[in-house]
Length: 114
Length: 114
Image (cartoon, each protein chain N blue to C red):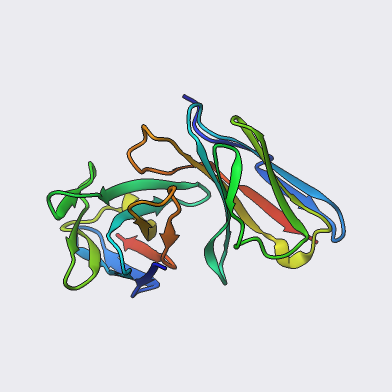
């Protein structure tokens, strides 16, 4: 299994531009999580899905952030418009009923907004 | 709601010395407890977990943690560290009946010096 796949691995953009981060969970996993990691705030849960349905989006910073999961094998996190304070590493993780409570993390997307 | 406190943000030690990374949690319900490790420029990986049964759990690379319900603690220990153990370690808690949502501590950076 390839594990959780995230793309791109690095993204540099200018303030005001739209940014789309992508995630492919492990096949068969039915829950997907988006996290943001910064030096100041540590690791924050932004949103998570169960069976493609958003369960808790209370961690989404503001309306500029949106996430979708159109099917069991793909999710996107979109920031529009982006701001310098959005610069962070964004992680996607997935978990399945067979994974015995272990969340599997992707390698992350390092976003820099200039 | 659950919360996790990692009492040390940074722990420097010399190679072959013992180490303890402290973690305390609060929760009004039964929980599962986890330690994740993050090596530089990588995603998080599960190190060990406590779900039920023996309160002492071990990882394959010599770490162990003990669940102490009365102290609400889940401290991570290793009797002799290696340079390769240098990483950031995150303690996390999950409510037993939740969808898989983890609450993470702020992380402890372990630096092993030669």
